[in-house]
Image 1 (cartoon, one colour):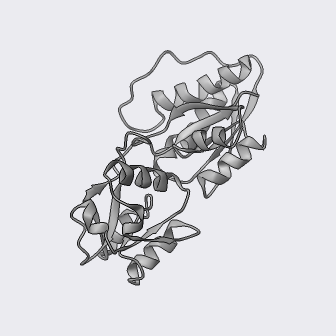
Image 2 (cartoon, helix red, strand yellow; image 1 turned 45 degrees about the vertical axis):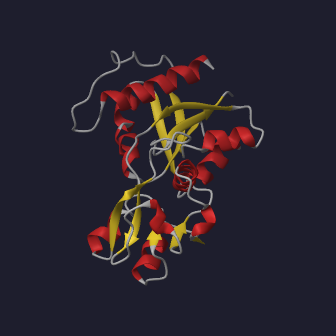
Image 3 (tube, rainbow, N blue to C red; image 1 turned 60 degrees about the horizontal axis):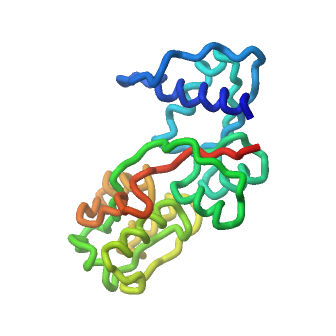
Length: 232
């Protein structure tokens, strides 16, 4: 357990002090290398807010940590692998810690958040989305049980918007499926994640519905994800 704490500290100190070419504020001096090199297996997703994880492998190696990254498409898959003991740590959605606890796991530990951002419903060009009441009767594509769905659903509750006031269209697979549904006119709006939020806007067939921001609910907050590990 002590070694895990050391390794986790090395990982996040290096991430915080910054391997990116951006101004960084160090949380403390660089730690001394571990006496015995160790391998740290971390599950991650190929998304923007996790870019520092990809860039810190060389820095960690100098500190005695060989970082092994395992890519997952979904947060839920990384959570499952972590709980199965296949990973030392994993980047998961903001609700995955609560989901794991609700499913009876007493072994999970939340380490830290990995980024926050406003989140907007993506509207199809020409469709009115000025306020939450404009959801009524619309077809909204969602990824059921996903991190963004938790944020969206929590915001609806806090704004008093009935979930059955619109038609939730469940879409499986990657974010590209959401964008294709919007482009074809099969749905009026999306609840998704980057870069699949910006693609419709850049393509001219979607827009950020600034009046429908769902990343600041009291229940979930604006975290885009978090790192989770286990006590063992």
